[in-house]
Amino acid sequence: MIVERLVFKAKFGQGDSVVAAFAEMKEKFASRFDIDVRILTDYAGPMFTVVIEQTYRDSAHLAEAEAQEREMYDDAEFQQWFGSWQGLVDSGTRELYRVAG
Image (cartoon, rainbow, N blue to C red; front, side, top):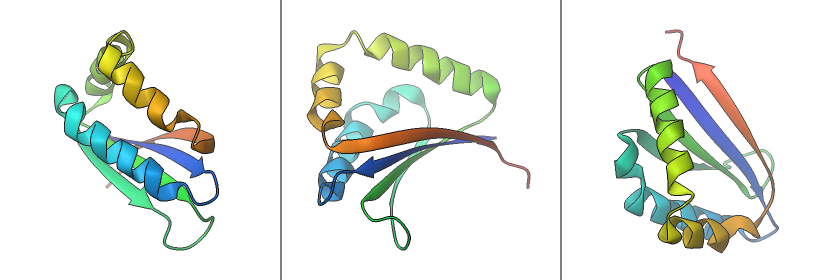
C-alpha cells in the first residue's frame, strides 16, 4: 500500500478555505480515482497546514491515478476548481510513503 500526502501551507487565515476547496474536490472528483481521500488540518505545529492524504493499493494503482489526474487538467470544471484555491496557499510538498506494517 502507498500513502500520498499533499501538504499545503495556506496563507494566514485561509486554511478553512483550502479545506473547503478540497472537500469540494473529494465530492466531485475523487470517485473517478477509486482512492481513499482524507483531509487533515494542523492540530499542533505550523498553523494553517492542510494535508490531503490519499491511499493507493500499490504502485500500479498510483500510476493509474496519476494518469487519470493528468487527463483531468483538460476538464473545464477541474480547471475552475484548481484555480479557485491556488492563490490561497504559500507552498506545498508531495510525500509518498510505502506502508510497512
